[in-house]
Amino acid sequence: MKTNISDMIQMENGEVNILHALQSKWLGTQWVGNGITYDGITWLETNEIPKPTEAEIATEITRLEAEYDAQLYARNRKAEYPPIAEQLDILYHSGVTGLKAELKKTKDKYPKG
Image (cartoon, rainbow, N blue to C red; front, side):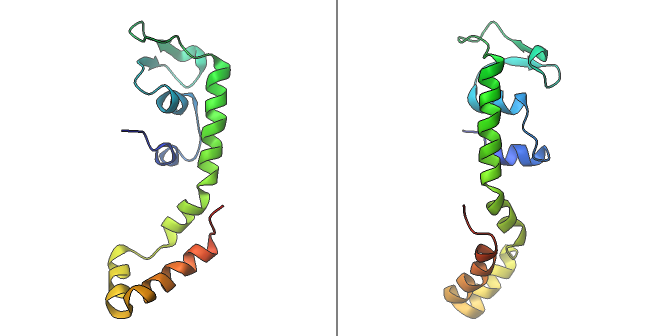
């Protein structure tokens, strides 16, 4: 299963680091992280591929930061959507049209892209 990097980064207060990059792009490799610096990464001999360079990791960090930033609208929407129980109540009393209208308020406030 692919790691949802946006969720993982969110748990880390939105900061992307070398460990996120390794977990994202080099999933399935084995390494030991002693801190969050390149020199603190011990690449295990059991890996079939060589340890990525600092430049490769920096490129992945940049990509992950852009991916995370691009999902700001989704994080904002998630925080403001009514709880599921409330959505079900709206659905029951106002139907699908009523629920769509309620959710549209948040979607309009935080447009995609």
